[in-house]
Length: 189
Image (cartoon, rainbow, N blue to C red; front, side, top):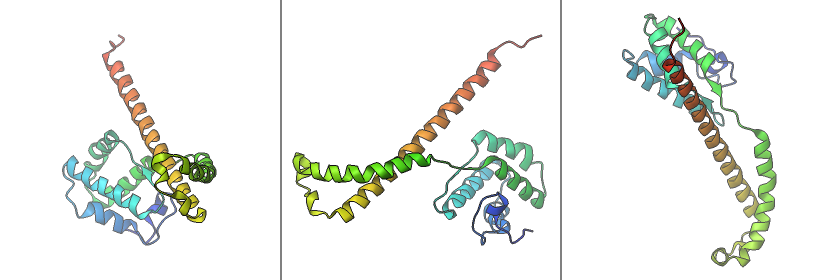
């Protein structure tokens, strides 16, 4: 049951050679009861959390709840053999889990603009009443500029990820409406 190759390499992703398919599968599915969808879904969510945690700096977009339910009822339940379930699970993951992508040009722009904004903001802070009391002029530029740049890039990342998830939610809602409209229309004879 399970080779010594990385589960993440099996997905086509570079990854940890210590996390074998056997370890990953047994940790999240083999030893847990998955007779009901709710139990399977909890195991799946734990797997995804583990997956994102051990891959530092990388996040993965997981399939929708509907796709997971479809996989569970049409594939997981009919496959009674543990070995077959493992194969089917990894095929499902390979097809449906994608690395979360972000626009690098956005971060480059934030990384270039943040240091300039930090210096300008630090100079202007002496003229702003509430900020004046912080005495930012006492903080050396070699500390202030990298900290502001780091916060700028973190803010840009958070903003881009939230706008991406908002766009995905809107697309999902549009897809749902289109499906409902298709059901409401009378069928052609």
